[in-house]
Length: 230
Image (cartoon, rainbow, N blue to C red; front, top):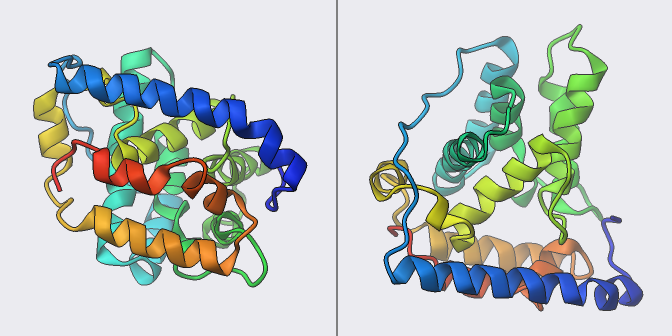
């Protein structure tokens, strides 16, 4: 998918948007009726490597406190969902992707979707000698986490899933309530901060995927309906 959506793209993607909205609505209703997932332990951050440390440092330098905590929750939720699904995620790659996926909301590249800055940061933080394939996996995950369709690549899929659970409650019924409460320890104020930052991105880049996720995608409405602690 391109960074800029044409009118044709926007029309073509409408059925996907409507389908995903309907699915999330049904899931949130099921959650309010008591459906919960299995409990699991919160995974600590992966064993530090030069790459995870560099990515975490860059995230701390650029992101607001609220979005830094969102990045941590994206890691926790994404890893937990992958475990629930029996999917195999590379902890180092997923942690780097989680730390960098939203830095473009605070340090964007002029005339580009905010994901472009995160993609650029992957190579900025990767140690010399990092295999190109691993770099490209993380780059793709950051770009594709904003895709309207569900990404196919495992890393991309769970980066989107972890982020969307924190923002809009998508797939919340897959996880246990104790895990969710523990994962959301520092979530206070995030929904309002997310709406402010997202609106700013939509004004800055009005024909991009972020703007489409807002309308017709309903992302900001999702922040109000999300039952996570806030």
